[in-house]
Image (cartoon, rainbow, N blue to C red; front, side):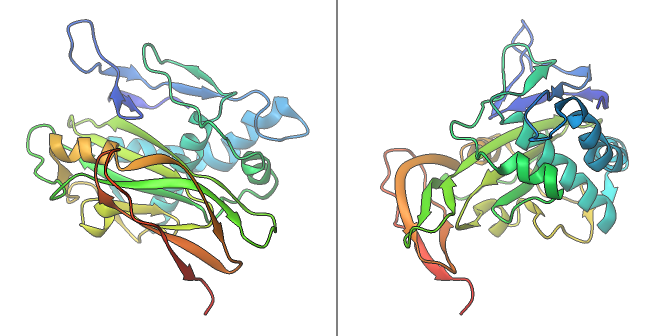
Length: 275
């Protein structure tokens, strides 16, 4: 899928740059090319299925968000969110081919879940442990930021009774420039057996698009981040090295804590999903 520009790209918080040091703007979007990573019995038709299931329904709304009238109704928000979840999932896959990137390649997830894309291909559904948030950065008039930098640690989880489930958490950031020179920031988190309490969502600075998309998305009225807020946003998620056992029908509640790698992080709280 190619979108109409101009727009810019940021991958995992690092923007594409011109030789003069300015952020690069382009009229052609980078593309994600899949060969055999969808889990299809017919790998050659994988892109065709993605096109029918996600690209064609979502394309008009992605273009609208990046254009002069960025207002979506409930159906538009859902299709936009589905397109973005799919796109960020594929950007993170180690076997994905990227066209259009120069210095900054999207970071592949170190432990990509084996069944994630296979199940998506078979069912057309995203698992509950994928969440997508949107924020808006305005380099000229943005004012939003958190009172202090915070981090959420995504650790590995497993069921303590030995049943199948869990995995290592991961996250991906990407930004798309709009026609008015703002940047739409998207953040996808994979959080098996966890519930994420996102500090930007709690602070009214970001919108959760998936799961449970909102009934409307008006980016003209959306709060905007300043440079400090953008830096905080890009570094919210930290991939941890610990592992936590979770009882069946329970989940870990992940809350943000103050902000550097050296800061001690609180133990996640286990909550009952079906009391």
